[in-house]
Amino acid sequence: MKKVIFSIALSVGLFTQLKAQTDTTKNPLKISGYLETYYVYDVGNPEDHNRPDFLYSFNRHNEVNLNFGFIQAEYNKDRVRGKLALMTGTYANANLAAEPGVFKNIFEANAGVKISKSKNLWVDAGIFGSHIGFESAIGASCWNMTRSILAENSPYFLSGAKISYTSDNEEWFLSGLVVNGWQRIQRVPGNQLPGFGHQLTWSPSDKVTLNSSSFVGSDTPDSVRQMRYFHNFYGQFQLTDKLGLIAGFDIGAQQKSKGSESYNTWYSPVLIAQYKATEKLAVSARAEYYSDEGEVIVSTATPNGFQTFGYSLNVDIQIMENVLWRLEGRTFNSREDNIFLDADQQPTQNNYFAGTSLSIAF
Image 1 (cartoon, rainbow, N blue to C red):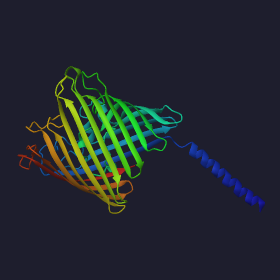
Image 2 (image 1 turned 120 degrees about the horizontal axis):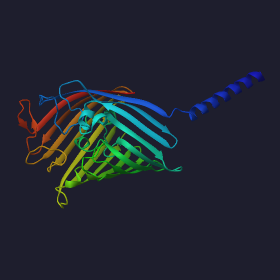
Image 3 (image 1 turned 135 degrees about the vertical axis):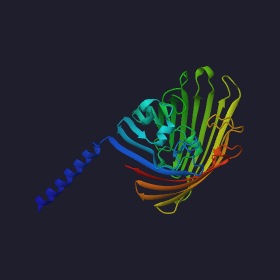
Image 4 (image 1 turned 180 degrees about the vertical axis):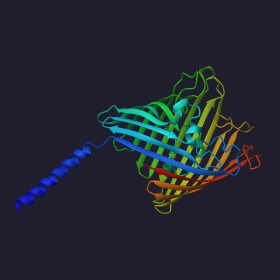
């Protein structure tokens, strides 16, 4: 009997030791991916199948297409981390149209080193997701199928270097950035001025997040340098187990000419509510407005520039833990000018579309 007990104890001990060794030798390399297909029908029925040019996601009309897909290798061990993600899709074509060659297919490519033994303080450099806003290119992580106007017209990505700090209790996150420009991998030709930015996030609980982010720099050659100053603020609140709310506000200003004390300004408020009826079913509604009379960000070549309201409603069905099916209807209404086209290709103040997407993460 004693031999049996000893044998059991020895087996348990060996299992515990092997498990501990496995935990300490956990593979630091993780491979993951994401695919998001879609179909959108625009009532304006554009002949070239391109939706309004202030939209960079889900921007093709009346065709089944790939909005965004990537494969990613992520390394994280001790005080070193790195990430390389290659992408394709209509999102990549539209958002990185200005970048040369294979840069168009880079979603993220960065390396980081933890520079403190006792604190969560990191320095990272390369190409990384933007520090601005509450939405990203990965649709399944956003509350709506399509992105808000403010997200579409502020940086999705940046290249440069950043230093970031997370407090011990993880309530505070602070980051400072030096970047190559406003959503640029390569700088604008003739521009030698780096851009700068910050991010400050406060999450006192898992139900409240407040965030402040900025960009200061120029998106023009030095010979005609126009300084740009931009700030994004948002709050995300889980009001109940089923009801969540996001409120965001962007504001920016850019010099009208080099050395000028006069500025063109733009701003955009947005409000999104999400109701989770069940674990598998969620409904989200969005209301937004984008004002850019000086056409700094959105060009319309009309007397009053881009002043547009947007409304959308979407239904999400979580087919599996990693598979999401979405349906969305959305409308844009120009406040002043006829900046859209109707089905007869005549100028109009309104644009409508309906769409669906299917995404899988792995």
